[in-house]
Length: 460
Image (cartoon, rainbow, N blue to C red; front, side, top):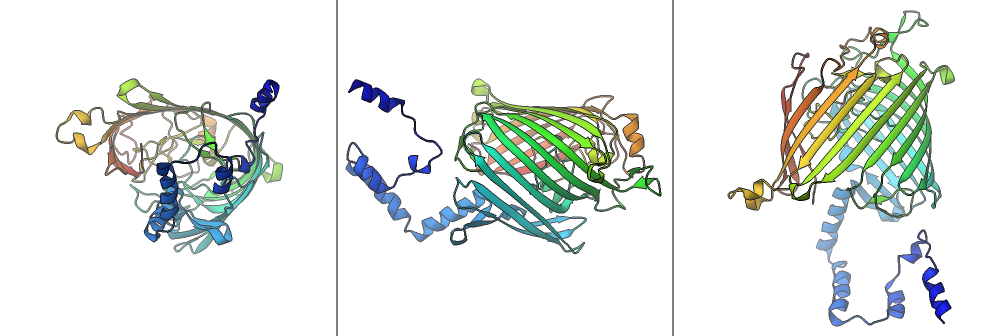
């Protein structure tokens, strides 16, 4: 009898079997050790009643759409969206409309396909993107993925290189921007990746990509570079094939779901990323041979009763001569929105590097200061301060290679570029506003010494 009991506790459930955690009411009625009391049964009755109330269902649907950005069409097993990228504007496309959809049978789907179509009324061109991913093994999280995109994008908004086929920065479609937002790029990207998670929260990705880059507004923004093989000695289009290896470690990260996509349930974990990219010349008529290594480390710190500090350090170096389209651009932000890991007072392509280090520090006091001011203590506001810095260099070879371009190639090498900011969060529970100040390099063309930006979102 004792041996049988011990064996019962040694048996392990299959975490990948949805039946293990999803049981209907009949199962619990037959297997519950104690009957529900009147109050407990009342909770079940209340939930069942709410599901029949139209007003509650409408509020639930609206909240779900705002949280996910997708409109669920259950009878077709697809979601329409994202609603947040449906309308936009930029100087190349003018008014831009985009519609997309993804398959969705449930949160544990072993495969998913997503796609979109977009149209710009100024350039009168259609754009598109499609991607798919398939979970081959749940235990090791072995995933195959690939996709293709032909679109217009604001590159240089991220330092750590990504090959997200459907991702689109808000800078590419922001309706309102500061200064001229005309440094946009035509991108034709095809990717194929293999992901595996041999150890919990340690992910390895092996991938390949082929992309074609050219300026979307050649008169205002040039990607020209010296090319001895061109009849004119100058080329305006980059064709590049790359092999990519990414190591991603997120200790303490917790997720739910066992499908090809999972949801995070916490945000207090650190993120360490090592990214190695090998550019191959000649393969599929690829133009450049180079090596790029990048590292980033993000860590949240809970500092007792003084709030929460979020820190990020990024560093990278490119070995080999590459033109502007393949260099590392210190990410500026000309939109009116606060975007973490960007520099709100930098213009796009204001600093260009092949070797760089950046630091971002953002501390939220969680109302410790405002709660002591009698007039506003009941408003539950949050005070936020930020400090950002960037240092980088650009070799003479890369400057000469991109000399035909029509923008200045400047790197923050003589002194560290820095900014600081003061923000107020939890305004009306959903809004945050930041006041950003530029510390130096005020002599740069069109330098912005001050900016005000904001963002929406719930924060608890």
